[in-house]
Amino acid sequence: MVSDWEPWETLVIPKRLPLAFAFMTAWMPLTEADDTHTARWPSFRGQQAEGISEGWRLPTDWSVETGEGIRWSRAVLGLAHSSPIVWDSRIFVVTAVSLDGEAELKIGLYGSGDAVEEESSNRFLLLCFDRETGALLWERTLREGVPRAKRHPKATHANTTPCTDGRSLVTFLGSEGLYCHSLEGELLWERDLGVLDVGAPGYADPKYQWGYASSPVLHGDHIFIQCDQQQGSYVAALDLSNGETVWRTDRDELPTWGTPTVITQGSTPQLVLNGFQHIGGYDLETGAPLWWMHGGGDVPVPTPVAWRNLVFITNAHGRQSPVYAIPIEARGALSTEPESADLAWSHTKRGNYMQTPLVYRDLLYTCHDTGVLSCYRAATGELLYRERLGEGRTAYTASPVAGDGKIFVTSEEGDVHILAAGETFAPLAHNRLGESCLASPAIARGSLFFRTRGQLIAVGD
Image 1 (cartoon, rainbow, N blue to C red):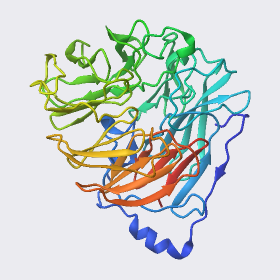
Image 2 (image 1 turned 30 degrees about the vertical axis):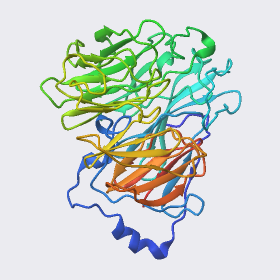
Image 3 (image 1 turned 30 degrees about the horizontal axis):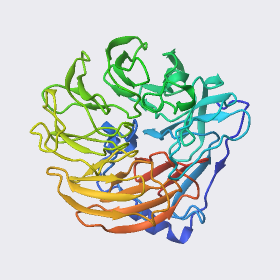
Image 4 (image 1 turned 180 degrees about the vertical axis):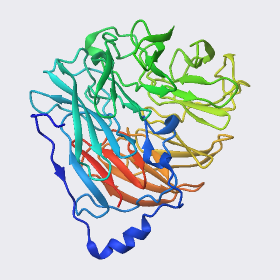
């Protein structure tokens, strides 16, 4: 059901009919099996933050300007870095719409730490679109009012990505509340966790509030949230059925912006968190710390990713920018010294500031804010190449994704660089989205879904 407030308009892009047969054969699934996994990208960076979707061919060349290779494009009002998520035939997006005109957003290599001055009322919306057509199926207003905390000029009031298990749809907007809906848009419950003061580490001052950005994670009957702030940081598991706290573990931590990752490999399932004062893994059932370490960049943003028997942590701000490869079975206090036996391997000066790394086909990819892409052997940390994407004049915030043997890296100006996965630097194409893009894309059934400054764009055919 669409409300009377009607800013949504589908922009149907015509396709070139003479190419229909070629496209039809090119975009058939790689296998005959109807694998529902390929139609699901249920949370930030998909399954376990992997950022990978296999089983279908993915596009290499497209043009938003001409419509070639574009399935549909949908205008979406508001300002958000929230990524789209996909469950079967539906796409879910969160946005914050200023009721006093378009909100301003800075892009580029912008280093100021100030917050945006007091803003007008916002309407915080949860939107559901049809994956095949882009039609708006329903919208829900989560909250309307003046934001309870400020944001960084490059951030938004809707930075976090929702998550779903196919029955419940969870949205956590930090200070603006936690919400659980059915996939039909019925509100099941909501919870106010208070104001989360997230800003420059050590500055408990509203002028340095930068906005909450850690997305919720679903596993089994629990929702996991990471609430690192100026004072009173914690990690918690909540009951999916009602939002009540199952366990809560205090953290000696300053503000962070990374999403936690559920890791089921190993002897004890764990929730792994990035951090500065406390990087670590927590027992999924009890919240008890399993292992912990200190160090790295003092503004941690990237989400941990797992591969085989390793967990990869990277961050970068201040004097350090490490990449850590940590054994999944690590326990207790770990040393971050370069030659530490606690780590499988590490580098001290090659980490990411904003982007979550990608492990694909046994290789680890990290991308610097300036667009310098590094590729390592995931098992050993051996550097295979380090090359610049573009001309070095734009910033990169969205995290890379992969599938069909291709790596997709998006700049803040909406330039999508496509590379062949492998041990050598092999660019395949460079396509433009036509708008700024700081949200990480989703992939489902041979299509990529980009949330740009004002559009939700489905690339594929």
